[in-house]
Length: 212
Image 1: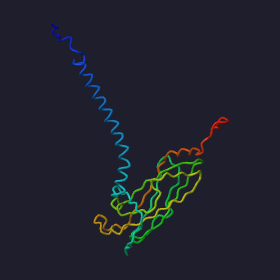
Image 2: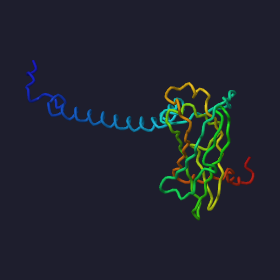
Image 3: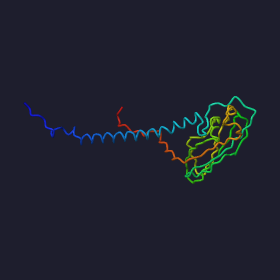
Image 4: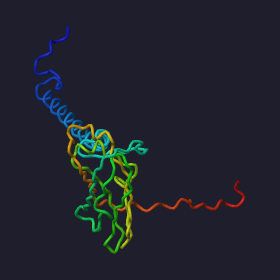
């Protein structure tokens, strides 16, 4: 008949010290998983937030549409144009014309101009907004250069078109009653130069003579 197991012969896995180590390891793994999960959510939130703003006009974000308005009102509105460059981008950036007065629902084409003042190529990307912010839901762009990587050669001067109209539904907005002027503002931010495109042709190795 076997002898009874004494308390000091309990396996290490069931001691308080070993339990504490297992608990600490579990907490550490959970914290790491939470950290990396939050980082992933932060990166995912950027495009999701941009999409939300474009759909709702939140924060003065304008709308992107595929077709022009089929309704033009006999009511005028003035659209002013603003241009800015962030630190680190040595470009001269400005609207070609400072403002236009147009009928609500009328489609307009205007241009911005960017000049690279450096003696080397540089790249930038433009973000935009509209003020008053509530007007962003009614400012529709058919064509623009926003969120597009733009590379300018040394001294290059580029004209960038914007095609837009103001949605006739703006006259039904209680929040925008009495608003006769909208400002469209672009800001260019520096970005890294795109990597050079690798040669598409592969180097072919000579086959030994007689090999099929």
